[in-house]
Image 1: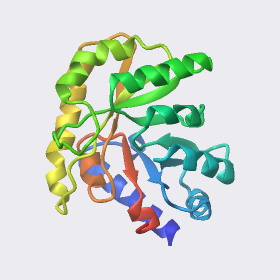
Image 2: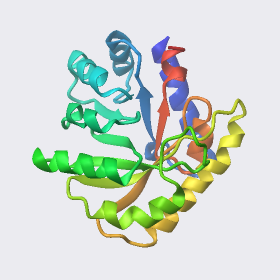
Image 3: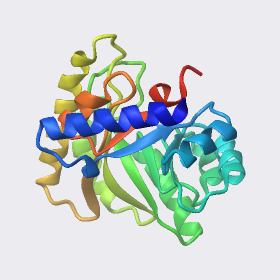
Image 4: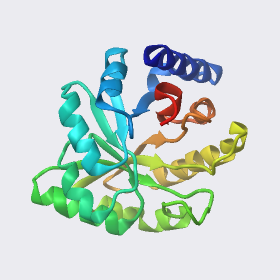
Length: 227
């Protein structure tokens, strides 16, 4: 079941990539294993998934220990509370959800104290929804030089979550907006900032995200079923 679902998602990513002349290898699938048992996570791993996304720091740490596979890349994709930073403790290759300069400063200070560096993406609220976390596009542009000066983190790209909509096509404009914002910021050549990654697209709309330049898609339900 999980193996078939995973194969289907990989197939759709490939189709969407080829449709716009992209290599399917330029997109990484993050299998969202939040609220999924370690057993099902291992099943997905055995079916070929090598990148998993978790959204609660303490739960994730115990699952990483239980799954115990050296060749898995773990990503943190949920809202990160400042008092939970210590739980991440170099277990995550990438944090997708740095939604403020103050959070980045806290992560940076913790990582410096541990003599490590953490790769992060900056979360942008391109839709302007009040309920969504993330910086506004103008906040991002204004604060980007400050992010670049933080020594304990390495900014590698941007992330967004569009409004929930049964029509996946309605997500497209938000993906286009994130890519355009990335291109605009990249052109500024800010020291300490790399913006090669675009994390966008989930179960409902990931093929459209791929068409619009996503390098990371976060897919859970289409692989593991409803939680």
